[in-house]
Amino acid sequence: MSVMSQLPEYEKGIYNHIMIKEIHQQEKTISLELADYIKDGLADLSSLGIDDILLSAEKIYLIGCGTAYHAGLVGRTLIEKLAGIPVESDIASEFGYRHIPWRKNQLMVVISQSGETSDTLMALREAKKHGVPVLAITNAQDCTMNREADRFMVIKPGPELAIASTKAYTSQLVVMYLLALYLADKKGTYDKAELKEIGHELMGIDAAIEKVFAQEEKIMNIAWRYRHIEDTFYLGRGLDAAVAMEGALKLKETSYIHSEAYATGELKHGPIAVITPGMPAVALVTQEKTADKSIANLQEIRKNGGHIIAVCSEKLVSLCGEFEEIITIPNVNSDITPLLSVLPLQLFAYYMAVFRGNDVDKPRGLTKSVQVE
Image 1 (cartoon, rainbow, N blue to C red):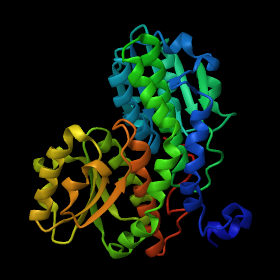
Image 2 (image 1 turned 90 degrees about the horizontal axis):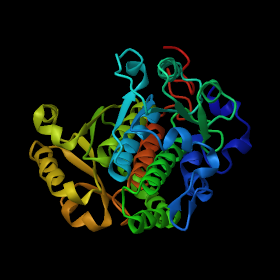
Image 3 (image 1 turned 180 degrees about the horizontal axis):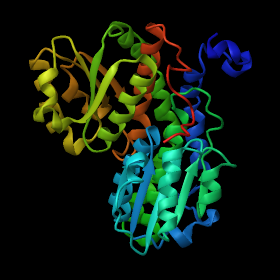
Image 4 (image 1 turned 90 degrees about the vertical axis):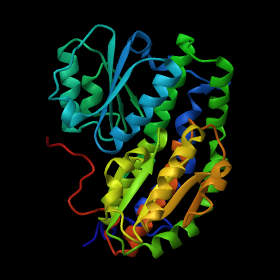
């Protein structure tokens, strides 16, 4: 019996699967996450009572597993750029076994949907043992992580029932933006007018999300054309590299296709050797500063007979014109693109799984909350 036959019909509504319903819920959940914490363009987290451990931090550890780890990678880039604070983003299952040079004025931020992830709890307890305060970001009010952390924030997407995370991931991303913007404002490390510009763009992101979802049929058709593949790369530079990792994970989880994520510049250091004629690579091209270099790398894939499925900002479309498939995202501040560029990757993973006849909402071998090390 499939998981869907066990769920009440009202859970799915007009959708065939929970996953696609939760993908589309992001039009509301992202804005919901922002609503209480951006005022006149500036992030304001003062109501959460976390200033005592957050504003004194001279180094931050962002710790998570899988999707939560990928959210932390985006957070690392944002916090370092806007707030000027050194950040380590690490996989919880590895962090717990490292010999960390703990110091004063450090902060650990643990990210977990369930708040019960064993590996992440191990890292949390290691930090606490060394007197380092912990901020937990979870999607559960009553969970072990919230109880053991010094402070916690609960994201607001509501229960996420599909195993492959979509709306919880983007809510975690929003919290990364809020932390980075708040720290930058409080510490005076970034031009306030520019911070306000980012905040206002975030508050108006609904229209941009709608434009991405307007391409759903196109994405579905791309998935149909490539439904028989067994290998692919996901590629990007900077923030795009972190989103590529999440896209590759979604494809693995739902379609069981072997997908690897690389920083685009790493292609020439080995991975390009496995490109075969007709093999697709999903490439993110949203960062203006690195777009030219990315395109040059991607052309090498095409010279070897590979195909490019590009997720490209509208203003960079001219650079992607020769590629086999192009999905566009609206022009927004380059720091905001992760909230948009991941949406086509979620849709692509969903439709690939559907066309391959997989149990979309309950992929084999996976659970929602990993409580073993």
